Length: 510
Image (cartoon, rainbow, N blue to C red; front, side):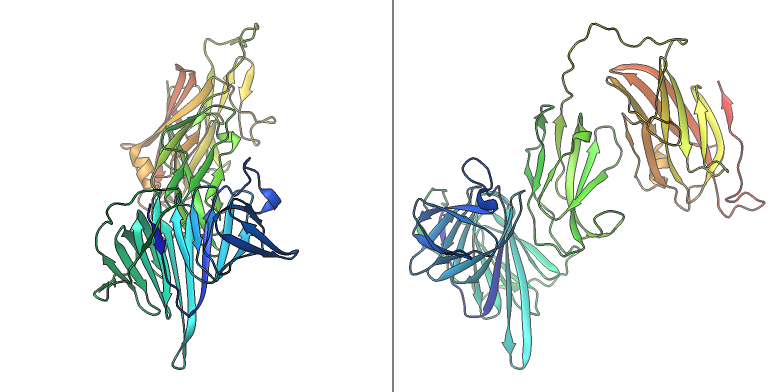
């Protein structure tokens, strides 16, 4: 990849690099609890509370929060552990702001010129400028995030304007409420109080990646550029997924770390929302909201095959979100294999007193004094009108295998327990029911819990067209038992006492 040469104006600037890398020593550890960089060429001065330290070519620069990295009168190249190269021109100064054990690091450029060769989309650059123009104070914020691996770009300031030139790969850029994706050969200018001005001149030819690239000068943006005036639908671009690679398989004892590109630093009430969907589930489940571009998959999700995606949201760390601030990322998948069970000489618990296991379905949130309705045993259950519009359809299943009852709800079982391997419960939901509850259906095959969502204001149905859900109990691939439950929904404004207080007792058919 060719190296970039970039200029820097005299405006007051803050250049922040948000580098999500495994910033550790040669063994992957976090030396000094901070950031490790290798000095590829030149020499740099590390200024910390303990004084100044000179690091030269071939040495490792170990820094922590508050340390400053300075290139004096010669160029300095710093190599990050993910392979990204930072080229500090003479009289350039960076400051370490924050870092984390997960690999998140933030650097602030205090002065000088910087060139960036990003080995992966784990690098976000933010430029903030401020200055007086006449008697008015103008400020501007601009961020750039590589959209693909092996991206090279230059970033410089001209007065209060920020300029970006992409030499290889693609860069997602954001200014205030505007965004664009700039490909190789493209240029963009961010002007305070105006939109992004984009000039896409085509791909740059003949770029090759080398360990120590040779210098190539980047020309200033052409004056014949066009204004980008269409407002964004989203505040941020979609996060780009980094790893593990799509369709990866993991052994039971392996750690799974989901990694994605971070389009921009987030505000206090903004989060990266991690969404998972187990194979067989109808909808995604929000599993965590985080500030950084990584999340370790918790052991409770083993085993299973999952799809995952990331979206930027506004809200609290837990609870309902206010709004989605970006498009969803791509959807990738991974499989987490089941632990290998050591064979034992003792046989499985016998099924006593019955030819097969039994199921008892608990429909929760129903419109009766108990707030639930139970349906044991039968293959076909007409439960009657037990819900009204606006109700929330969810529940669980008690499974009896031999003399043991497995139930995950503390209200119904003094010792809640999940189904043992290889037993699991599967659920199938009426498509119309899924649509009338906002496509939120899902279930947990080991806990035998299910949820469908909140019935909308047009969900009332009668006996001629009831909703249904199917419950199936499997031992491995063998189907042991199934129950199909039908129910109707009352209109909350139904005349003649048919509103929220109306309950039609369940009826059953063998």
